[in-house]
Length: 408
Image (cartoon, rainbow, N blue to C red):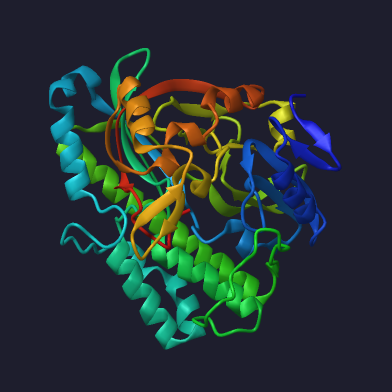
């Protein structure tokens, strides 16, 4: 087996001590069947990023996190990268101008969608009319916006075939954030829309019994946020395909911040994957690297090790440097940073040398802050098969230092 068993936690890749301490804490809190760390793991809030916790009848709003249903979508187009090479700069300008990154909207689009008629909105009605109306208005306003942080829209060239791919990464935006904070408030007997004290990195997971009224309500609200995230990624993908004048002939789409009802070893369980991609046998996944690295399409294997991983794998390369370490501390009054290890020139030079047309992004998302994706993939070679290797040719993110409270 490629993983280590460290004090009951199954660990793929090189253990990060801070994340391992968190994974052990998760294992010791509640009715836990297994705690795991994927090879891209690093410290998160309450549950590590790249952390997987398998529960018996419990669900963790803090484990799923604030960006409920953050995930990736990738499509293969009917075009080749060479078809757009001469106009790549103009295309990236159009994507940056048409798609809304960071705060607010750059377009006037106000999307209607069948999810706004989903019966699970009744969960928020049961909490209160004000709560329902506020969250639904926020959801309508932000549907189809990408946000900031590590959220992106990328163009890729498939290494073997030259085919043009499009990928995106973001979640349920402000709606998911307010849903998470609201249920964390209710679990602590505070008003849903009350001011939450905020989580600390090392606090124990907040747990709800799925059979309880509050647990069942959270599960339904989380599913609604999942539908919302899917709808947003679908919309952005359609917009990019229209800019390209392309059609999709293959797609991969899944969450990596979510809780799933699954059956393992003959037992029904709840699996909370935080920054971890489902990888059941035959299941497809899109795993993104940094803007100076490959991304891949993978398929879950039918192996004993994948069963031991509870059909889970990495969601990306994994950070090795915090945002503050990379970009420095931000002074919001002067909008300047100081003390960062990565300069803008160093980032631009690295991305240019890799052949990427970049729009937006800050040094906290530079290639230097992430592991090499191939390294984490090798740790999971017994659980997933790489089907397609994609090299980024265009990357679009929110502008450097644009604040967005709903980023990962």
